[in-house]
Image (cartoon, rainbow, N blue to C red; front, top):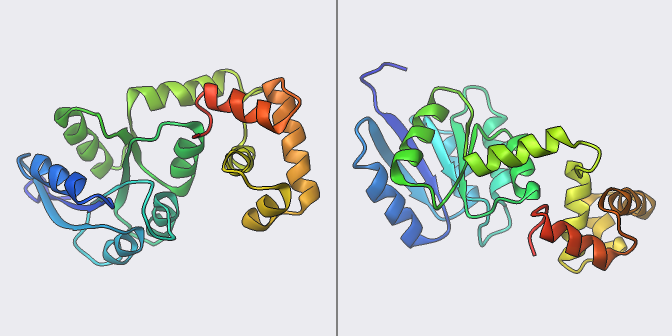
Length: 212
């Protein structure tokens, strides 16, 4: 990228106040240009496919069908795609892993100060990883103690269990057999040192592995 060229930003968040606040903060930064802001993940995918976007600031939760991690995967799968910087209030393992595995270059929390947000945007635009300190710490903890860290699939299964889905409903949602779902739960119980769905959800929530 030419040093004189601004970093062109696309904002994706379903809250108008958040989008307006982000735009106000980012437009005061030298070298930034907000080219559009959209309320849905689907619109973000569409606009990110057009020329003229360098970094997408992506929330994870939207009111529509598509989630931020799904939009991130769709955007980053294309050749020459813009970088995606996740900006959200969620810092559980489930959210972090989903976003990073989907191809996000960075992961920042919405309570980040403006200077940290600006630095993360510049880092992401340069193709380098931009992680909030708390997020980096969670990932390091997983690497230090992999034996008790839930896999991406185990985290997905347990999150759906926490959301109240039965094994049959989880199997349909994730396109798995019920036997596979049960196998994942057995591994989850062993890793968390529990013996029931309720205890697993409670333990994982207390450790910040899933949302409640």
